[in-house]
Length: 470
Image (tube, rainbow, N blue to C red; front, side, top):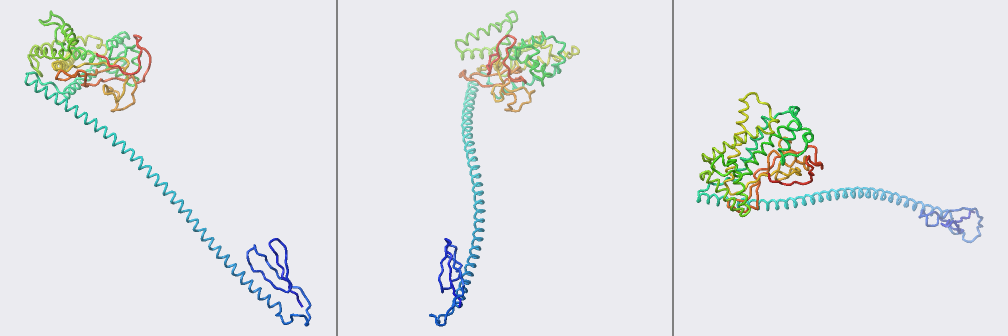
């Protein structure tokens, strides 16, 4: 007879057994004890108790079958769990991919929002600038309307009193621009076009030219001035010629309202221009508006009350003045800068051309002096630097600078080919503390940049720009 013994293996490694009982592995989790079946032979007498009890092998088979079914269910459960795990892993991967996509979308939205914020700030700035521009335009419009009102009132009064109608600012600026072009054209035509042509001219003569251009040219040695224009050195004779013409004509005509008066009383039965100038200065010190009215009225009386036309006396005086000044210019330092002329015909043509320019400048200046406004000519001082945004100057055309081109900003002004021309007051003989620009200064800029040396007279060159009356 066999004896069945059921031995259990607990998780702590101990064993337990029970005789006469059959147990099978249930396939449960490792946390439960796992029973094992042990079969041993045992003799049983037919007379033993329990003879009618079913044979243990039938119970065992039943439990084994039950255990197998349980194991099969556990196996199926494990497969289902693995499928669930794989499904959840797929969902997790999809979720992570979606999270990354959403993060990228959020970043894109943040960038778009940032761009919109910047755009909005820029638009607000543009709106602010536009408002300021509008305010400036309105102020300028009001100022122009006020000037137009003053001009209309002056024209009406001039009509009532028989005075000529004053020139408008636009007309004055156009005529001054035309005068500058004529001076530029004359210098371009008759000045030598190669610096090598001046090799035969002594440095002493060239220094004399520079000295004569005081206020219009850096007062330094000729050799040093040449070095300031490495790319424009062959244009130096042209620039210096134009500067000499401008300095002489503007200082003699536009800085002296009585320029057509004779040099001395032996010339005509009129006071000399120097005496008239002294009287004008004395009146100016006592009563500025009154002095300008006196000057205007005196010149109008001299011209028989005519405005844009000149009387016979003024015509003759302008002719004589133009011829005299033309002779002074051509016999002065400028002659070393000019091309030699072949024959008297070419010499006369050159002289006549210059005389015509002087006559044109004289007619314009005389007409301006008959008005109540007070025109002044200015050099830009010995310490002046060029800036493209300066409202009182612009670079010579030789530099080929566009508007607001900053390439030469901060460089020193070396030569002035036209002075700054301002007009003070109005035709009502009022507001002489206010000025307007009739013509900007035209300047040739030191190409090498700013230096801090002293000029030949020992005067230091400093920063900034100082306007000086020419």
